[in-house]
Amino acid sequence: MDTDTTLELQLLLRHPRSTDGHEVNRLIARCKPLDTNSTYCNLLQCLHFAETCMLAEDEEDGSLLGFISAYRKPTDPSTLFVWQVAIDKRARGEGLARTLLDTILGSPACEGVTHVETTITADNTASWALFDSLARDQGKGQGVRHVLFDRERHFDGASKSEILYRIPLA
Image 1 (cartoon, rainbow, N blue to C red):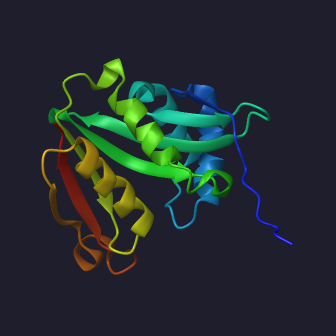
Image 2 (cartoon, rainbow, N blue to C red; image 1 turned 90 degrees about the vertical axis):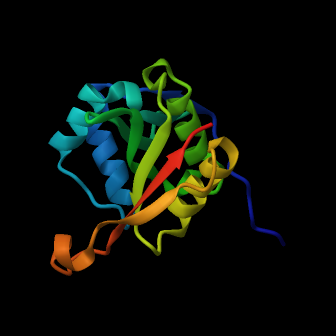
């Protein structure tokens, strides 16, 4: 007997509110190996950067299933820096991360954005797949990759190197 089932979720995509910060923090904690930030940090993301962040709620039970934090770089406002992508295990493999990212990029807050940047560890295949798909579908070329934060120089060996991926948008 086939025991596989497809979970169909009805999702509400929206910009976060400051009151979402605690739930965002809890979602990120469930999405290992993402680094957790303080709840205060997530509260500020949901308040100060709400227009360049996006979340997905299960319309049925109100649970938070996805969140992307991003901001326009103060030194280069034409670049959207994607800080974290957190997708609950119930919603993985359904294209939710890409939907959230596309929604952010299509929002008025990203008018004039010509590049997307993010950092990814070498072994994070899900993030590479997400951003490679963005480069392929919306980008102008492959994008540029280089180590931004080195394991030894920046993390004293305690964390993996973070590779900056800069994608020019079409």
